[in-house]
Image (cartoon, rainbow, N blue to C red):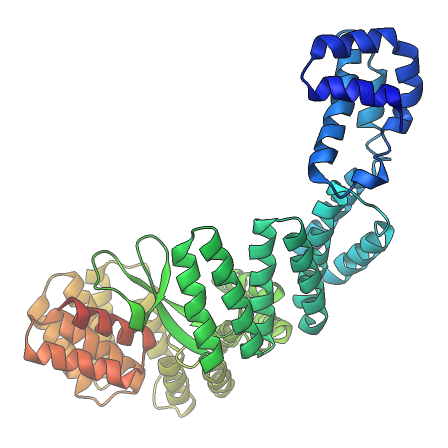
Length: 469
């Protein structure tokens, strides 16, 4: 051990900068000669955090003293080193390249880069490698998971989690516990997913995030009991999510969203977005191909099949659309309007409805027209197809928007009298209840909507309306 080094570092630790400067001037040439050796951290302190910090402070202070008081940048340059030769700088650069690969969906290239990076850095020790190694394991796990190789991702995430715990990196512990929860869910391993949800809850409890802890304990129970393929959860004003049976008495705005038994893989989500863009631009054949590629990238995702079904209807390939909607229902029962859309596609396939009626319904559902214009469109379509419940529903919506409540009630009753399929029936029950004054009939309508559950969002809305009453 260098006695000169310890003499200087002791002065640094004591905060005696005058003593440090004097020693640097007195031993100028010796420090220049010995400094490269000082940069090699003694092996015996590499696992001692306080000693490492003291050592690093000594190196930095001496280098700055030479630069600021002795007019020499040599030691500071040695400490900074050639960035291209610095293994930690190269490591971070390779991680950034892997991140870029994954953003561009070049997952095989990312896997190859990350596996080589782990092999190249296996012998590096110290706080820098301890910080970067779990990140590298996590990146590699994600690159594999997004290619539907969750089995290979799990041990890598376990390694990242263990290393994060070893260096007390709470953010890492939260991230990799959450990833293990999601990967196990995707693989259909409910019990394992529940275990990681419980670990997350314990971590959140330890860092005083009680709401997050409560949420993950709920999710752990759901996984143990067998989470449904698709369910509706409430989103409160603070963006927190709660199950419908845990929903407090509404005091603010409540939104409803679907929550499935697994997340959508990123390649699938990107392809679906591209498909929507192509469809919006009228490139229907291209959109269809993109949705079909998305479904192949993640065979558990319902939205790719749902968008495929809609596109097939636009292309007037009705029987194929029915099959796509059936697949949607199998993957996520009650996904958006898949039940009503499937019924409509079948009516088109059986030639009981004209394509123009579908176009009118599409404009009423998603078109940009003002309520008065949509009301006129609904009236025109109903003149040709008076028994179509969906048209009565949309007519009622526009009348309610125009504050013509009595006529909205009549429109909803007319739709219910046609004996529609369950999705539209549920929405009509809720729309009628919303247009009525509070009372026995209103409560009965909401109760029917909850029991029918033809449309899951409408049924959830009915539950909140009853709760508010």
